[in-house]
Length: 170
Image (tube, rainbow, N blue to C red; front, side, top):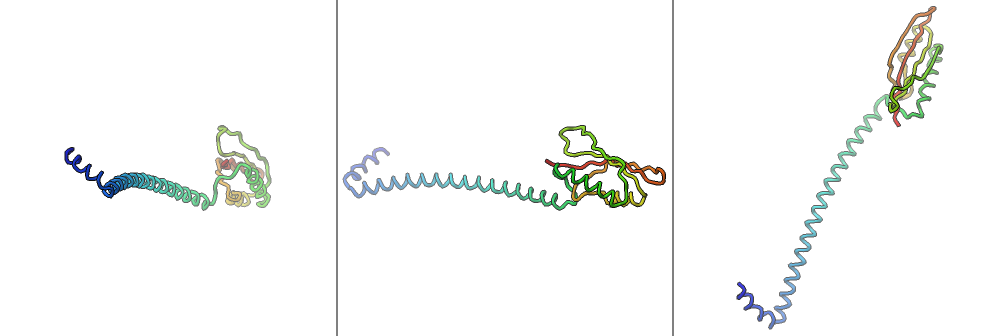
């Protein structure tokens, strides 16, 4: 094989055109190899980018669905600075239902990391007024959970003690 290549070398060196064609052919082969390498690298980058876009779209779709679900809920956790507003609405609803406030206190939290606030509310009034108040026990869209409810009849009035929790998010 070496003999055959050596036999053609003098032919290339004698003819300038053949030498130029040979050099151009080798350069074109090298350039083609380089471009093919770049093309393969670019294709791999495009595939990786497409996969990242797919993951991002999936995340955004899931996040959007969860956000829409929460926003469509009637009641949800509130910001901590609106907790006092919830209490004022609940206390003003007492007056609207002809009930008298007998006591109100904030319950201590067992867990400092807890994302809720507990309260105890005691009021008295007529049975029908008490039921109307309890049936409409809410404040705007705040998520409120009644922990306990105690009703006693005293001197012709119903004394009600209700412990409830307002859920907060930071």
